[in-house]
Length: 241
Image (cartoon, rainbow, N blue to C red; front, side, top):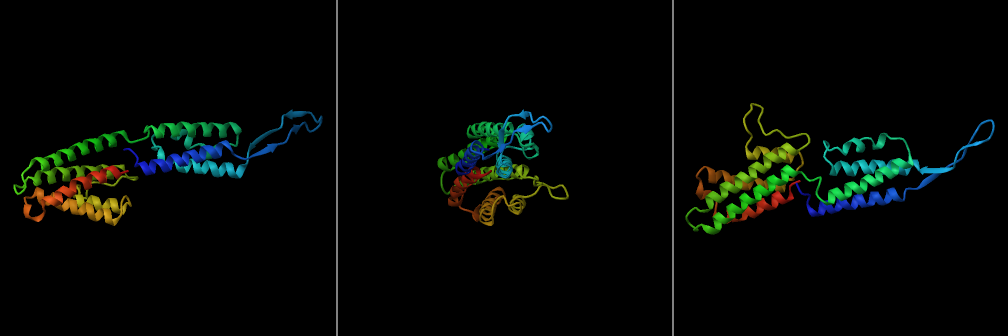
């Protein structure tokens, strides 16, 4: 899905920094090589990246790129080889050029999770429908109940998708094969450190509203709570990632 703007900026800044480091990498001079007997110069003098800063830079490249590029992406073939390649000027230039390419692709959103992005857009559309149900309804007539059910369904779908995106994936089934409840999904995602207890508490509150609406317990939640629930879930979707 699309990266949150602040995170995208941090990663782009990181790529810019690595590109700059690659372009200004300190180099050590390689002395001329002479024939052991004749003294003839066999290779011209040249330079190569200084070992310590070069290796440190390579490690930083792998660390940052692993946060941007999915493991199944074709780019991982050369990323995985970065720390296993011998020290060559050509390799330094190659990585720097590839970093520039990755930066351009990342800025254009080519590494965003397309399927999850589509899911988010569909979910946002359903939340828009839930909001219209409230706007077109009549207060006091339980018109907020369908909106609570619809927005709750969006939340559940989102939680299940997030479980599948974790590494390793979080199972949405209990050991006996039954489907986990929304609260179970919330607990598992919190254990995976996807969000903190404050977020989990809010998600449980929305889950309770959805459950009350689905089970006909209309006196256990209010229209105002549903009105707050819809934009809250929308914000949660926007920050997922």
